[in-house]
Length: 433
Ligand code: NAD
Ligand code: G6P
Ligand code: MN
Image (cartoon, protein in one colour):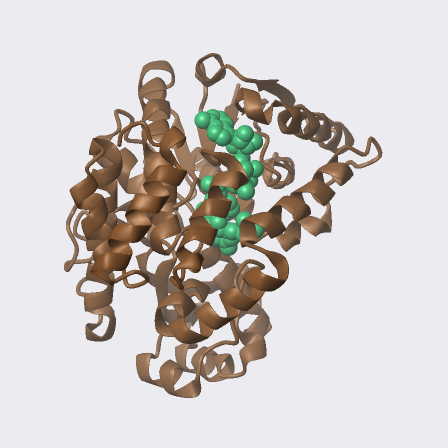
């Protein structure tokens, strides 16, 4: 028996995990996939569970799909659990995106004031999941995708009862795929030395079969068409000056910090033309769910690539497979620092390369951060620590401080205005305040 529980099973991304599990079934012979959701997500859960059953049937694999609203029951006997929930749904995300923009402040679901409020809504709920897991499946691994994945994972490792937690994001995986395309080689052969935080990670070195390709990749990235960007980020890429000077691969989210004026202009234009990203995603979801409900459909449709998180399941499925088979390969995950980066606290969660085996991730030592990015990474981590304390303790002072030091807010009066308006807008989902 090998049981996987997917919390937030009604997510439109779930068919990706199902596909990933089918494709890896020889190495990871999962016997049951239990989808869990809440009352509000029941309709989506039903559509997804029917599609998952058709996908499994077509594959001929021996996997049982179950769907329920009873998380505690589903968690019994779980070996692996993935979390992909959205507290307050896309309506809450709409507020996270619209309210800061109405003040001319940048951000999106994981960055700026919106990202902070997503953390405040989410962390208490996942701490409950952690409590359930410690009691009902103490040996299971929790693979967390729920955003903001870095902060959520840190909160779980600091304050949760269950410590087998790994945070995952599709960006490092997709950056590797992007580099493989640029170089015309296989993704498996590309190793990028990642340093930093979730959605604030840099690629310091690129190796292909052990040979250093960093300067070649940096040179080719000067052509914007070679620069990877997920569907949710509109960016025109990096200048040659920036790339040559920092000599690292930035990730697409860095645009919000280092190309702020341009990103604000684009985000406002996008907002006036199409509404917030949350509204665009609601339309994409509607089309996707119509497709998913087609009885003839037996595989993941390509339209899922309109979502920014496309291919996220590869990262999750690879982590689970390597733990199960004690593979010992290198994967990029969010884990507790514990000295990996000497300039950050031990209990800070970082996004880094780790050897993945039966005992979980073993981060590969980095040492000191490069001088060029040391300060900004320490600042971002400091901001995240304040948000986590605010989320767990319902501490308004910590929340205000986090907003003031966040580079996408940074103004004391703006921080206060945003705090008051977002606290009011989200009050139903923020019982701790
Ligand atoms: P979604 O709105 O479809 O939500 C997923 C499901 O979670 C919904 O069916 C919802 O009903 C359910 N849900 C909400 N609260 C729940 C709870 N307490 N228990 C169980 N289920 C609950 O969202 P989505 O766009 O599919 O994204 C899901 C999550 O994954 C978000 O937090 C998103 O930011 C994150 N995400 C992360 C990455 C990454 O790179 N880490 C990539 C893609 C998505
Ligand atoms: C990604 C990120 C995710 C993010 C998502 C947004 O690339 O890594 O963490 O949540 O895209 O995509 P969406 O389609 O929901 O805007
Ligand atoms: Mn991500």
